Image (tube, rainbow, N blue to C red; front, side):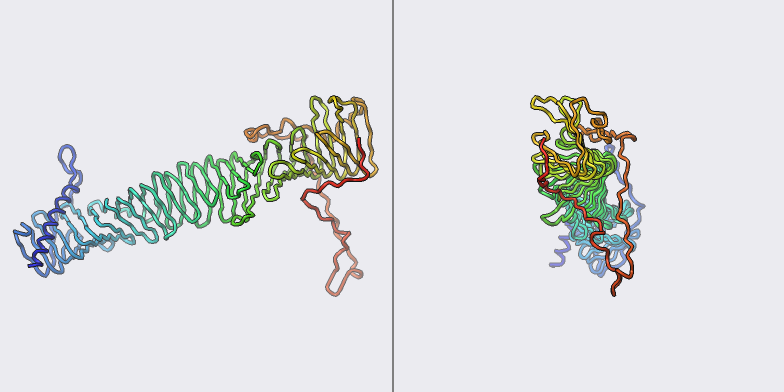
Length: 588
């Protein structure tokens, strides 16, 4: 009697499910015709049941099948514990350990199923599991259309495809294309590590590409990507993002019209209107901009090109703007408190900061030692001073210039106010020292030459000095020369203003390149180079001659002894030299 009551209960549930099925399956057009087509009317076949009976009071015109039920229809096979078959409508309700199979690649499991043989449409209820090749779908209510090969749910579900797990409130899966669509509260978890959160997602189980539309967040290790249109591959862990995506990684941010990201290689590329910001160093912030760039997390390297612009924000300093054909930013000691950056720029470099400007072929800026090095025909300006040579090194503290070193063919020119006169210093090696942004001392080592116009208290000029020496030092106070020292055996002359010969008014390598000087951050993009005649002529650096040692006098049991120390070239240093007073200095 109890068993009979259970069968009656299941049958009434079947009638309710049948009503829901009719509502969902047959959506009508305005003229009353069904939207979907039906398959050829093949009859459902009952192959086996331990018991079969009919009770009009329970099932109306349905036949009750109990025990090891086996039903087939048009290539579909179904096994269950019990079922009610409606021959007139060519449909059935199946209960208990329901297993629905189609070919060798598709299977459906659930606690119960309603199937219509005419439309070949099935609804599976509770503990639903749909398997297709290597994909498995889990939900509590699945609709499956055999004609279109579409399985869909709207009560929440999950698809597991290899290491990828996708959950959503609504979902569709298509057996023909092996593709899925997910809507509302979509979450893709890949390998238990990467997570993609969105509201609309298309997923291809063959290619493993997921296409997200709408606001999307991709969390991958230390990286966080935000986009509103992008694709992600669960196998290769690559992502292609469009519509101005943003990538965040340990204090760094990359933005572009589109970004390609490879997690395994820690490498991402950005295209069009890119902005790379590195704020991982609290004392030093860098921005790279351009039309193309990349960031390599493993190497700690970022690159920008095509109208590239670099910005450096040092603590308590104005922003340094650098433009070049290509800019590269290298990060070191990233996971320590001593992190620092090195910026490389090439070619056709132009740089601007309120207190210093520069033009050269290439440059290197090191934030650790705060050193800016300019290579190949460089020019640097500070206030009314112009410095040029074969290589210029600018050292600074947090806010102002500390010193400038110029190597080979060095020339410092200072334009005097309200006049056509220029103070000039040249030599092989020049060192200029600053205090609170003001030049207070200059040194020249090798072939030193000086032309100086002392300014009177009324700002007039009465005479000028000309000097040649092996070494030279000039002390400056309040932008005026206080004294200078030259030696040994200097050659010096003093002329009344306007009485000096031309060769003692302008040094041989004198040049004033005010037309090249960058005037603003925007002006760094306007390349204005020297004329060919004005460029420095390359002078090869001399190398120490190879030593030839007599084997008889310089050999030991262990081989040839090294040459004496005085035969070796003295080491050089790129650190600023502190000025030292000289007892032989002369005041002017």
